[in-house]
Image (cartoon, rainbow, N blue to C red; front, side, top):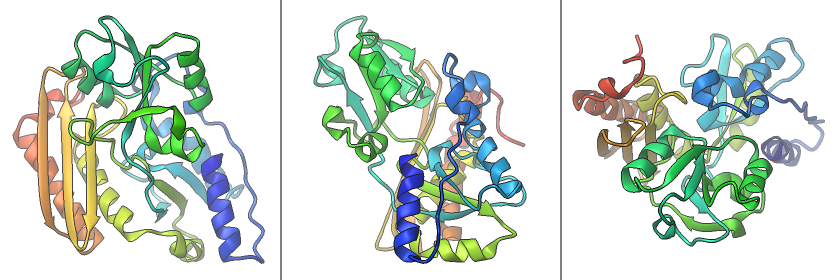
Length: 296
């Protein structure tokens, strides 16, 4: 809801005469909280209901966390705008400990991500990693009731909701590389409404667009979903892009890691760099770590 209100306020500032209303919706991904996303359908659970509202005319645009958006858009739908990225890092949150290194043997760490789980299991085999679902209030409540000694969340969500003070430590990109699109907002529209895409152009951020184009290409080539411990993070600055990506086994015992840097001036070049990184990972044997192999 914060994201929708943020976009609404930006649009109203751009177009004062325009009436912008929010159609609040609860997706299947929000409703199913007793199972891991990898067990119930993955990323698409957060967007299907919103796409139905676009298709039947109840809504003109849908606002998503980009890391929740499937890597291939359905026919007729367009990722029309990518907004400036918030902090892309993961955050360590605990009431009693200052860092992951301080956690004692058997401490329970909560996370919703197989990617985070793989890194935690590799670096801290003495910790117990357990699934953690729900919105931020739900997750924080479980921490505060003592069900977990620590939880790992996206820093962006905590910052947007004014909860940055709960962060004990920001986790470095190496080794805690984020998911593709983490920290960025995307706005989805129907391709048959190019006028809406035009109105959204002032909200678009080129550095973020180029970075997530590279990241999403890596994920697309490797069938990125909630079933795959896959990370991809790129930074674009002054026509230079750096990208880091890995694919791991859930237990963290096997990992394929790739880093690349190149001159990038447009989306096509960003996607080409992402493709080269994906090919590097595949050459290292990443396909063997994917539960369903490489996408066809």
